[in-house]
Image (cartoon, rainbow, N blue to C red; front, side, top):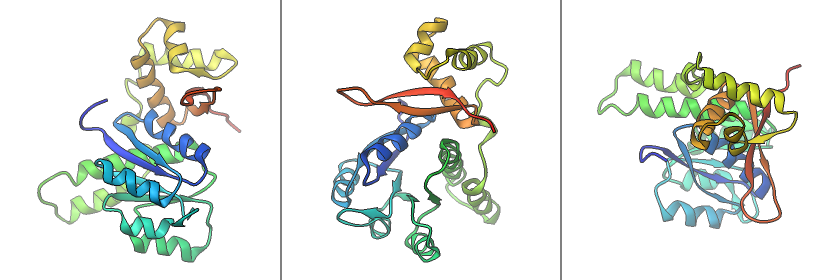
Length: 223
């Protein structure tokens, strides 16, 4: 975990959805999860407990409105919701949301938005901005996956990681991939994150009887 990682708070009333979105966040290089919350009250506590760069917020929460939470938070926000009403989308943008994603959506969509948000932050990291830089930052939020999401495109190690996933016949964790091809778990995680960002591999959560769910990876299904 790098000190410069962007921290993300995930807010959803369904703990499984919150964990799934948190898993996608943590699978993308340069991001880490600040916490998951299932209520407005819990989100407020987590946002006050430490720095948060971005919050992924559901609209319908058991103790209040996600739109009002977006308006209240001092960090950047994106709304992830099943609400399809145009008025709700307009309210989210008026409250300050940078993006509005309607559930369900492919993992790659959220991964692309996170990659775009990272480019948005880098673009606006300069002490001063002009119209071209502002336009580039806004475009980053709307663009697809960044070419940089695919690290070491010609890397034999990346090819081995992908081959292992394709041939496994069942989802694998980063640790299982690492053991299979003889690399460190951190290296496997880095290449898996790049493959997720490129849409080649899908990440989901494996729930056990105790403890936190584990990320596992499988080939992206093609039509």
